[in-house]
Image (cartoon, rainbow over all chains, first blue to last red; front, side, top):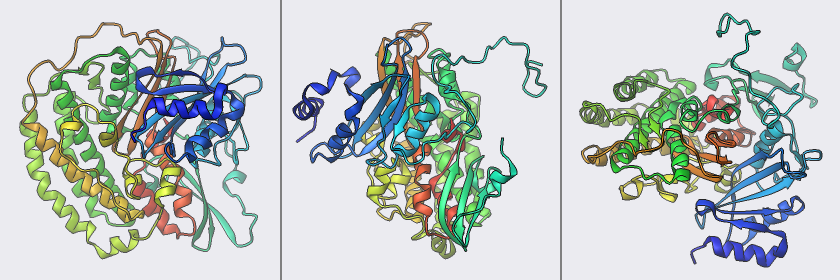
Length: 168
Length: 375
């Protein structure tokens, strides 16, 4: 049987009922949201189910929406089913004051580094992660640079005197 | 800031020794820092430290327009910059619903495959050099030079191109293009057999790579490996076959799978892929359709509100672009799924209980490009 977006949606609703919401299909990819408390249940259901088998974690990333109250940070999972050749995307939202999300390292080994990266740039605290520390930035950094309130360098600044890299 | 005590660490386990490989080490092909825990010559743990050339390209892209950001992406995986550009252009086209003219599609595929060839050539030379054979490096660069010259003729640059733009390609191919490519193919078809004679059948090389750095199919999937690294373990993950883009579904080529799972299997995948790339180029080079090389687009591109994901098969694996747009002229959030990042995360798993000399062979077989990992 060819797996389609509709059958994935049907299975999810049958299993989780009201808890999975906001189903959309932007440009063919099934997208939905779940409460952050059940992200692991959804991931392991998608991973274990005989017909779904979403075993390949393509990417984890976060998006910062400063205007959404208590839903400032979205963690976006892209999953790929190698047997059915289908991609889906699902999101969990978390408040920025307490950005706690359960880790997926128990299901996907690749989640280890991807979650470290998400923590590094957005400060999402993955509960249960074996080694949650910065990966691309220096360990001493005390801010999360991809959040919207962190500005880019002003291109017109003149205080920086650097012979080698211009603006001198 | 690193203190001396950070670098000269001592292991808590009796008899274990911690050494640092890199950030400036010839076999890491860039600034990658490995903290290796050894017991004698046996590797107990490898901890890669990344980010030495992290430039936060994702943050930078949030302030660049949809035409500008494509140029920055060729600085990520500089060995397959055409393919990076291609992935980004495709993602923008998806949002704007632009139909790419057939001529541009064929030119794109030709450029992609030439990029793949040049990337694999460099990898072949570099991997042999890591293992201790210096000659292949010069052979590889001799042939690679021909490809970079072809790029230079058409795109003006040799390494970091900005040729693929939303709607097609930036300029038509050079009038010499077909002839130069055909000359190159004739030349390289002989040389690739020389490559095999020189290295593939070499008993020293085989002993250094066979059975080294084993990763099973299940683990390769779990670590998110893609590209030749995963196909060397028998995972069918070629984006060109799974989600055909441009004219790939009309072409006759094979997805190379090797069940071995070791360094030699990954080596064979890339060698065979080069032959497939040659075959793709041969199928297309005489059949470039006439017509426009770029679709008509507005001067200022504005993506509709929404989310877009598109992926291409780069020389190292699945390169994905995820754009979140709020309807403006710049992306709200952009995420690059770089293949090297996930492939490198499996390094610790592959090299445990191996010898330290094997670590270099494993890194060579992963085909690491550090700017691609650090972004």
